[in-house]
Image (cartoon, rainbow, N blue to C red; front, side, top):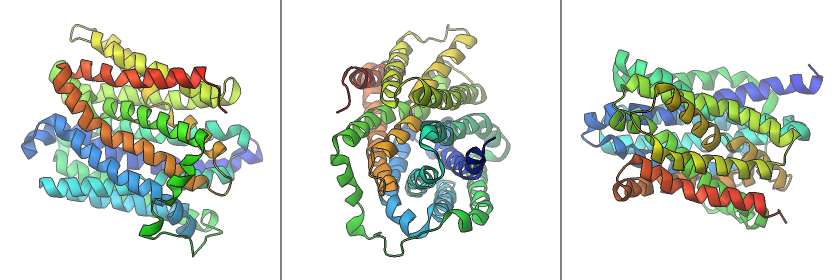
Length: 395
């Protein structure tokens, strides 16, 4: 192992751990939905509205993250994000719908700034030739969190109830916040105590997206983010309601889809760095997730279990496998001194897509007559964006 590679181990491990746990904090809700919905007196599909609130908070957290990172450091901002996830999950455990929604907002505020923070740290630590691989490895924490949620949360719900499961996940977030404290002295350096974090400067980074190439990435992430969140948000409910699966088995299918995306994120990063351009890889993934979404029309309870697992793996590897390459490309296109700000600005549009998608999916669900039709509707825009990225050369 070279010296440069060894120097990457600690920052990648720290950011990967943070990304994984904040993802568990977000994705535990869709897994719990078949149990929590009846407990709150609402349909399980209404988890989409909770996820929309979470990602509204993430929009704010991501776009303000650059200023907070510049002033306080990437590790300190990550610790704050983990602590906010604990607070949000604790409010969610109240089982009082207004507090549940407020808790979702706090979880989102905690989740949002962790990606700009990690981008700031990893760009400084990574050689340019490894950028897509490193970002894909770190971003594999998102589907890894989804896989953990799918595999572990049903067991926790059966053992200690959904409220106990929420508190347990929040305490795990707090434990990690303390665990990464020793790394602050090494990574939270060259801080700017005068960096703007006022309300007036909240949306200032969005001006960076006026760059046409960054704007193109923002639009692609808006569409791809919508497909990703509909897969993660509704898969368990789809399987329990339409396929009559148990919560545990449906959770395992979700876990498989997320594990496939972990492998996919790393593999796609290697391909983007070694064989293709990142733009080409993003275009191919858009086609892949669009085709997977349309193929949902053929899904039925008559499918053998192995085929359902294979389909979930293909859908997850494409719909949840694009983020690392996207972030590496944003970091490449951004001004060198504005990487965390540009990342937060582009993620604002990613999260905007995620906020808009669950209510629109619920509308498509009623108009299309079922989950399969709704998934297919969401697949069409990703097919168009993927085709454009492949056909139109970057200027």
